[in-house]
Image (tube, rainbow, N blue to C red; front, side, top):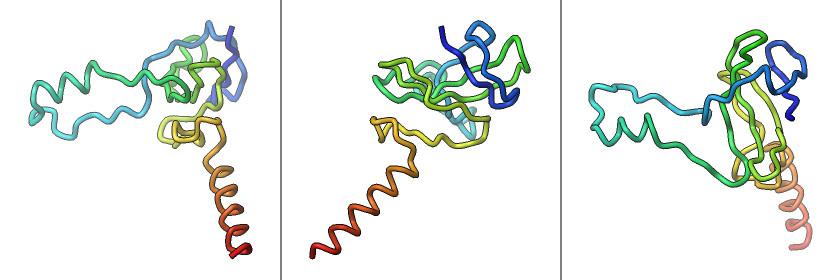
Length: 119
């Protein structure tokens, strides 16, 4: 069983209080009337299903009833973070180790400084 932290209630609650709603950060077409049938079908039906880091939309159905996002590792089922709608995730699929973007940037900067010293 998952224990999920609701970023609005600011409480760790049991999974049964929440419902997954699919992939997060899906941008609605700016002008739906101008979309082709193929573009509209892609928007409505096609979602990513990656192995590893994935951003998902969830709702706290029994609690505050608000939507929020979860970054989860689909291999280990580990929840890396929860964050409010409109916020950006700290963890991305480009960092399969599950490191926050700030930590990856700091490590890259440290490596580049070390390489500058060696040269």
